[in-house]
Image (spheres, rainbow, N blue to C red):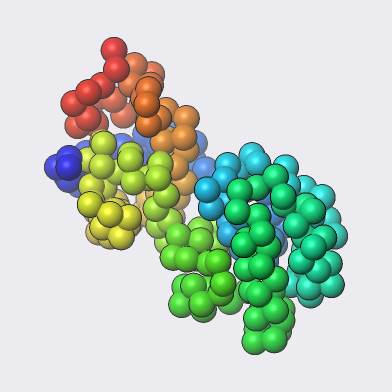
Amino acid sequence: MAKQLDYHTLREIFSRFHGHEAEPKGELDHVNAYTLVVAVALSAQATDVGVNKATRELFKIADTPQKMLDLGEEKLIEHIKTIGLYRNKAKNVMKLSRILVDDYGGEVPNSRAALQSLPGVGRKTANVVLSMWWGHPAQAVDTHIFRVGNRTGIAPGKDVDAVERAIEDHVPVDFQLHAHHWLILHGRYHCKARKPMCPTCIIEDLCVFEEKTA
């Protein structure tokens, strides 16, 4: 595991990320908090591109929990059957939609505990929704962030919870809101798992990764 980078190095890294893209955005298409919850839940073990393709028509007709219930599970499956684990995900979407209608008046709650109580919504999903919709500095650690955090020394940790804590504890406060998006995008497009693009990386000189590509 890489050694945790010091505060001044982290500030320089995130200053560069900010300079490169001041307002990074998540790549899952959504029109409101509910469709964001559904999209993130569907994205487990699937690509954002694949989820967006499946939800493009779905969200035109089912953009609220009640409309999703009215659509029904079988018709939902028709929309999302190109996504992995689609049957189980469809069941979870219907269950969480019922809970939102019955217990929350059709609105998506803005607390992590309430979000995590919904079927198919784990801590990562809850953090994505809190960050993207309500602007909370919640750190949703996926495989990209876990890899980048450990490889670079930005947020090393033996599991996703440890990496999440490292981001919260060490990344300068003024960069917390966008930290997870910068790290996801960096991992997705530059610090790739098999062939990291080190020669064109904007933080190459600050990263502690010992196996940098030439």
